[in-house]
Length: 186
Image 1 (spheres, helix red, strand yellow):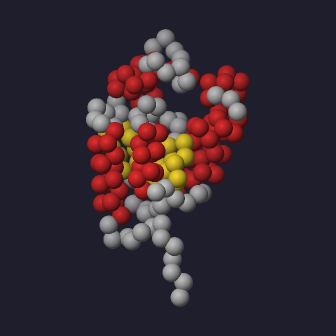
Image 2 (spheres, helix red, strand yellow):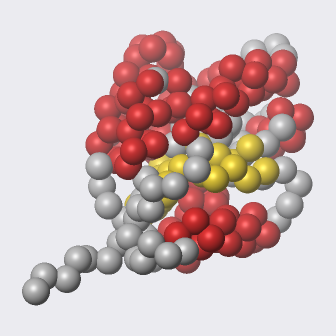
C-alpha cells in the first residue's frame, strides 16, 4: 500500500461512499470532497440534467477532469462517483495519488438503498435491480483493481463500518510514519 494523506472511496452508487467519507474526513481532520457534488457545483445543474444534455459520455469527460484535479490535492477524503473507475486515467490517478477504499455492497442491498432516489440517472429504468446487478458485474473487477482496502458495506451501522475502515487504515500505515507530516528541513 502506498501511504498518503489522501483517501479515495470507490464503489457502486448507494454503497455509502459520501456518508463514510464525510465522517472519516471529520474524524481525521481532512477535507471532504465529493466528485459528483463538485461537478454539479461547477456546471450549475444536476447530474440527471448533465446526462440529459450531454449523455453519459459528456458526464464522464467532466468526471475525468474533476478526478484528475481533486486527486492532485493533499489531505482530502474523496467520495467518487460510482462510475469513476471506468476511465483508465481515473484508475491510474486514484491508485497512484492516495489510498483507495472499495466499499463493496451487493446489488440487492444497493437496490434497497437507492430505489426511491430520482437523482441517479443510470437507475431510471424499468428494472433498476437488474441494472445494479449489471453494473456490479461490469465494475467489481475495476474496483478491485484500484483498491488498497476492500470493506463490505452491507447491513451494518455507519459507525461500525467507519471503525472497521479506521482499523484497516491504521494497520496499513504501521511503520510508515505520518504521511501527511511536513518533512523537517535541517
